Length: 64
Image 1 (cartoon, one colour):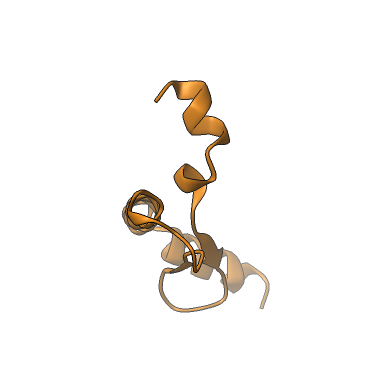
Image 2 (tube, helix red, strand yellow):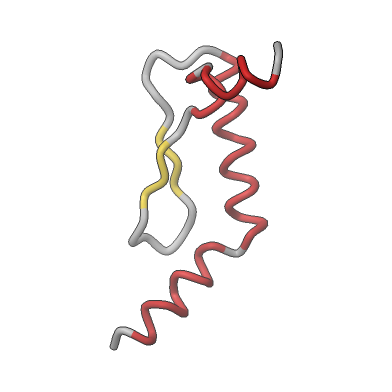
């Protein structure tokens, strides 16, 4: 698939992040096919590797 196709194909953008939890939670669409589910796993892995939970926890400390 072309890069333009990937930009508009919702299967490549599958998954919504939940904030306010002590971990990474990604909700995939109920009708996601195998490709969409794979993409949500890749997205989750990137979030974990980026240290997003720790970054958000540090931001919350400034708000106290």
